[in-house]
Image 1 (tube, rainbow, N blue to C red):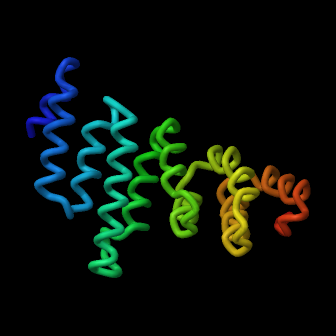
Image 2: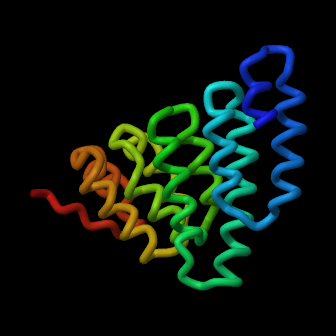
Length: 168
Protein backbone atom coordinates (compact mmCIF):
# COMPACT_ATOMS: atom_id res chain seq x y z
CA UNK A 1 0.00 0.00 0.00
CA UNK A 2 2.81 2.39 0.90
CA UNK A 3 4.44 1.87 -2.51
CA UNK A 4 1.23 2.53 -4.40
CA UNK A 5 0.57 5.69 -2.42
CA UNK A 6 4.14 6.93 -2.91
CA UNK A 7 3.73 6.80 -6.69
CA UNK A 8 1.26 9.67 -6.48
CA UNK A 9 4.08 12.03 -5.45
CA UNK A 10 6.91 12.91 -7.83
CA UNK A 11 9.50 13.00 -5.05
CA UNK A 12 8.55 9.62 -3.57
CA UNK A 13 9.44 7.16 -6.36
CA UNK A 14 12.41 5.84 -4.36
CA UNK A 15 10.03 5.09 -1.48
CA UNK A 16 7.75 3.24 -3.88
CA UNK A 17 10.65 1.21 -5.28
CA UNK A 18 11.82 0.29 -1.80
CA UNK A 19 8.32 -0.64 -0.59
CA UNK A 20 7.63 -2.81 -3.62
CA UNK A 21 11.02 -4.54 -3.29
CA UNK A 22 10.23 -5.39 0.34
CA UNK A 23 6.86 -6.76 -0.70
CA UNK A 24 8.51 -9.01 -3.34
CA UNK A 25 11.04 -10.28 -0.80
CA UNK A 26 8.31 -11.08 1.71
CA UNK A 27 6.30 -12.96 -0.92
CA UNK A 28 8.95 -14.49 -3.22
CA UNK A 29 6.80 -17.07 -5.01
CA UNK A 30 3.58 -15.34 -6.04
CA UNK A 31 3.80 -14.65 -9.79
CA UNK A 32 0.92 -12.20 -9.82
CA UNK A 33 2.64 -9.94 -7.30
CA UNK A 34 5.11 -8.67 -9.90
CA UNK A 35 2.29 -8.25 -12.43
CA UNK A 36 0.25 -6.23 -9.88
CA UNK A 37 3.23 -3.97 -9.32
CA UNK A 38 3.50 -3.49 -13.10
CA UNK A 39 0.04 -1.93 -13.07
CA UNK A 40 1.20 0.56 -10.46
CA UNK A 41 4.38 1.51 -12.38
CA UNK A 42 2.97 1.33 -15.91
CA UNK A 43 2.34 5.05 -16.33
CA UNK A 44 5.17 6.20 -14.08
CA UNK A 45 8.29 4.38 -15.26
CA UNK A 46 8.55 1.93 -18.20
CA UNK A 47 12.00 0.76 -16.98
CA UNK A 48 10.40 -0.53 -13.80
CA UNK A 49 7.80 -2.32 -15.90
CA UNK A 50 10.46 -4.25 -17.82
CA UNK A 51 12.28 -5.17 -14.59
CA UNK A 52 9.05 -6.41 -13.02
CA UNK A 53 8.15 -8.41 -16.12
CA UNK A 54 11.51 -10.18 -15.86
CA UNK A 55 10.76 -10.89 -12.22
CA UNK A 56 7.31 -12.24 -13.11
CA UNK A 57 8.82 -14.56 -15.75
CA UNK A 58 11.46 -15.77 -13.31
CA UNK A 59 8.75 -16.52 -10.75
CA UNK A 60 6.56 -18.16 -13.40
CA UNK A 61 9.40 -20.42 -14.48
CA UNK A 62 9.95 -21.52 -10.88
CA UNK A 63 6.20 -22.05 -10.41
CA UNK A 64 6.04 -24.14 -13.57
CA UNK A 65 8.88 -26.38 -12.40
CA UNK A 66 7.13 -26.87 -9.04
CA UNK A 67 3.65 -27.22 -10.49
CA UNK A 68 3.61 -28.18 -14.20
CA UNK A 69 0.54 -26.92 -16.02
CA UNK A 70 -0.01 -24.11 -13.52
CA UNK A 71 -2.06 -21.17 -14.75
CA UNK A 72 0.81 -19.05 -13.43
CA UNK A 73 3.27 -20.81 -15.73
CA UNK A 74 5.72 -19.17 -18.09
CA UNK A 75 3.61 -18.96 -21.27
CA UNK A 76 0.45 -17.81 -19.46
CA UNK A 77 2.41 -15.14 -17.61
CA UNK A 78 4.07 -14.03 -20.82
CA UNK A 79 0.66 -13.80 -22.55
CA UNK A 80 -0.46 -11.43 -19.77
CA UNK A 81 2.69 -9.39 -20.36
CA UNK A 82 1.98 -9.17 -24.09
CA UNK A 83 -1.64 -8.20 -23.40
CA UNK A 84 -0.39 -5.32 -21.24
CA UNK A 85 2.24 -4.35 -23.81
CA UNK A 86 -0.25 -4.38 -26.68
CA UNK A 87 -1.86 -1.27 -25.19
CA UNK A 88 1.40 0.69 -25.44
CA UNK A 89 3.74 0.44 -28.45
CA UNK A 90 6.73 1.52 -26.35
CA UNK A 91 6.24 -1.52 -24.12
CA UNK A 92 5.68 -3.92 -27.01
CA UNK A 93 9.37 -3.96 -27.96
CA UNK A 94 10.30 -4.70 -24.34
CA UNK A 95 7.84 -7.60 -24.28
CA UNK A 96 9.31 -9.05 -27.46
CA UNK A 97 12.83 -8.72 -26.05
CA UNK A 98 11.78 -10.76 -23.00
CA UNK A 99 10.83 -13.67 -25.26
CA UNK A 100 14.45 -14.07 -26.29
CA UNK A 101 14.79 -17.25 -28.32
CA UNK A 102 12.08 -19.15 -26.46
CA UNK A 103 9.87 -20.53 -29.23
CA UNK A 104 6.77 -20.79 -27.00
CA UNK A 105 7.10 -17.17 -25.93
CA UNK A 106 7.81 -15.95 -29.48
CA UNK A 107 4.69 -17.77 -30.70
CA UNK A 108 2.66 -16.22 -27.86
CA UNK A 109 4.00 -12.78 -28.79
CA UNK A 110 3.08 -13.28 -32.46
CA UNK A 111 -0.46 -14.38 -31.55
CA UNK A 112 -1.00 -11.22 -29.50
CA UNK A 113 1.01 -8.46 -31.20
CA UNK A 114 -0.70 -5.87 -33.36
CA UNK A 115 -0.61 -6.27 -37.14
CA UNK A 116 1.61 -3.20 -37.48
CA UNK A 117 4.07 -4.55 -34.95
CA UNK A 118 4.13 -7.92 -36.71
CA UNK A 119 4.88 -6.19 -40.02
CA UNK A 120 7.70 -4.29 -38.37
CA UNK A 121 9.32 -7.11 -36.33
CA UNK A 122 8.71 -10.29 -38.33
CA UNK A 123 11.40 -9.79 -40.97
CA UNK A 124 14.03 -9.52 -38.22
CA UNK A 125 12.61 -12.47 -36.26
CA UNK A 126 12.30 -14.73 -39.27
CA UNK A 127 15.85 -14.10 -40.46
CA UNK A 128 17.25 -14.45 -36.92
CA UNK A 129 15.84 -17.90 -36.14
CA UNK A 130 17.44 -21.12 -37.32
CA UNK A 131 14.45 -23.16 -36.13
CA UNK A 132 12.57 -23.98 -39.35
CA UNK A 133 9.30 -25.10 -37.68
CA UNK A 134 9.24 -21.96 -35.54
CA UNK A 135 9.98 -19.81 -38.58
CA UNK A 136 7.10 -21.44 -40.47
CA UNK A 137 4.73 -20.97 -37.52
CA UNK A 138 5.71 -17.32 -37.05
CA UNK A 139 5.33 -16.69 -40.77
CA UNK A 140 1.84 -18.24 -40.84
CA UNK A 141 0.82 -16.08 -37.87
CA UNK A 142 2.18 -13.02 -39.67
CA UNK A 143 0.13 -13.88 -42.76
CA UNK A 144 -3.03 -14.32 -40.68
CA UNK A 145 -2.68 -11.27 -38.43
CA UNK A 146 -0.42 -8.83 -40.27
CA UNK A 147 -0.14 -7.63 -43.83
CA UNK A 148 -0.44 -10.57 -46.24
CA UNK A 149 1.27 -8.48 -48.90
CA UNK A 150 4.24 -7.68 -46.65
CA UNK A 151 4.54 -11.32 -45.60
CA UNK A 152 4.39 -12.55 -49.20
CA UNK A 153 6.92 -9.95 -50.35
CA UNK A 154 9.27 -11.01 -47.57
CA UNK A 155 8.93 -14.71 -48.49
CA UNK A 156 9.59 -13.98 -52.17
CA UNK A 157 12.60 -11.79 -51.34
CA UNK A 158 14.06 -14.45 -49.02
CA UNK A 159 13.73 -17.79 -50.85
CA UNK A 160 16.52 -19.31 -48.73
CA UNK A 161 14.13 -19.28 -45.76
CA UNK A 162 11.75 -21.62 -47.63
CA UNK A 163 8.58 -19.80 -46.64
CA UNK A 164 5.51 -20.46 -48.73
CA UNK A 165 3.13 -17.52 -48.85
CA UNK A 166 -0.51 -18.34 -49.27
CA UNK A 167 -1.34 -15.96 -52.09
CA UNK A 168 -5.08 -16.05 -51.53
